[in-house]
Length: 334
Image (tube, rainbow, N blue to C red):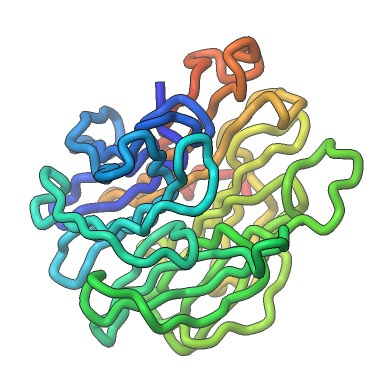
């Protein structure tokens, strides 16, 4: 009955944690928050552990946008944004949440909010943390910019930033060889006939200096495939998973790269239903982790935008929900 915008994190013990929005709507639940669920069997079953965020002095607010990761000492760090009731700006103050006990309890504080956190919080080699954000270019603009913000004190403050590109929701991965990759959801410049949603596809950017500067991007998916997630596998393969809202292909699509993101496999469909109208069916936002045996666990969400459109969703659960796919890269047809 909920589970939008899932974000998976593998804890030092091997347990998988999932941060999920806890209301069955597209961020419209008065008094709603981000919950923390865990799986101790590689994604096969899940149990509620805690409510990650809180609303404090705004009990009818909506905390939904989130970024999550591990600090250098293994503690969980999350940044949570959100809106006042009815998604009316201004944004709520940014909430920093930290847990030293794998999400059983959380220490929280409020920070100034200049941007929306998204994706994974990354521990940098210099001891700082990095988190992708996005914000509108101006109060009157529909265009956004994506940027990386740094914390020198394990998430207590966030100050220095580097611009990635024009765009909004951005996922960043730090590869083991030092390369950083970012995939950014582009802003929409042409809605055509409104058959395809939102932006003009997903773009990929590279950084050779730990996210300090970013090169010129290149497109990695067409319009209608966005909200991408990046994962480096144990063998160095990069997996990019996309939301697909193309009519007749609603779900999650994968592309793989074995050369540090320079070239990519043809798209492979992980999960889809033959829905045709993105105005009625919501889906995607994949997030993936790799288990010790090489299985990839991918979380996603599906749901009808109105209860009367339930038939446009997945047959096994027709309300908003987080689903899990377990798959192996060596068995894909790429």
